[in-house]
Image 1 (cartoon, helix red, strand yellow):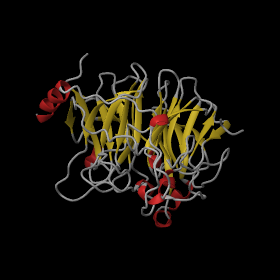
Image 2 (tube, helix red, strand yellow; image 1 turned 45 degrees about the vertical axis):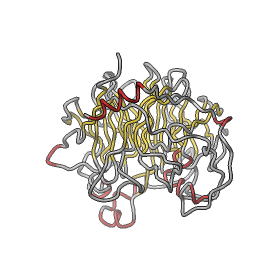
Image 3 (cartoon, rainbow, N blue to C red; image 1 turned 90 degrees about the horizontal axis):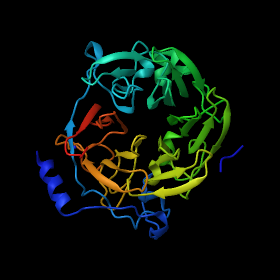
Image 4 (cartoon, one colour; image 1 turned 135 degrees about the vertical axis):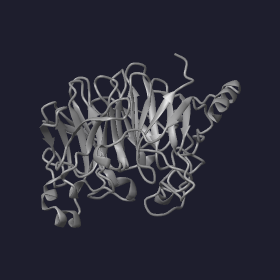
Length: 398
């Protein structure tokens, strides 16, 4: 409880004929095995019990999606930076994205609008947030069309030296109208701390149908092996007007604990899904913070989206390798059922022949994920690949 969709066609046919199907393995049946000896901040390095050891890596599933790289063109010849914040507009067609201003330079380029709205052709039709955001990490568009941004870090000393105004930005959640007016701020921009007055490096924000606000903190916790000031790992809850309600969760490995809750989603039943990236799992809660279940079959998730119309769950993994998620897990995007936990499709990582990418291992995949009303998936890319990718469902029955 809280406190106070080529060769992929053949692959698809082959996989379908073999009847490949992976179903939910509940946490109650997962083997609890011995700790693994390991290195700084990685899963293997923590020396803590690896709860998902009994969960077989889910990589060999049909991929019925066509990959369309380099979706979207920014205005003025501007090049995309990393994108982790993506969400569909209330019209179900346009997509909002948070660009980190090239090489994470929003703090020193206050003239750039980091938040952009793109039409289905990839043309920017709206933009906002210039001079108000350091590191757009999470985003949610509420039912009124307002755009909420989780600004996940403070400006560095060198950034402040270059742009002194950046000292008063970051580590806050900002609510903008669709035309860019700042309507509400949660936290104290430029400072970290505890609610009700402060936040600590918020990863994501989600607005429930009833208007309640959920914020996931803290970004750097997954790299820490012991609790500390930068390992808050909590979900805070707020009234629609920004009044603090309370929080649940803390740093740790047990059910109800987190190591950097990195993304948030809600299903048609109103259950809150938390991408607990540092612990390689999803945790499910009631809106009051009561723990319901823990799922490991979607891998090490950076971003999560649930389509409320059909409860399809989209989980994007940008970090898996033998260090951060041992056992053969691949980076990629897993699509499944939020009602029963079945993983149905796997979109593999982008492969780079230039140099190693991501957290190690092969290829790279994005962090942010969202879906339009036609079932097209939009991913925000980070690392060696930047910008956005669209995945079009070519072989999914309708």
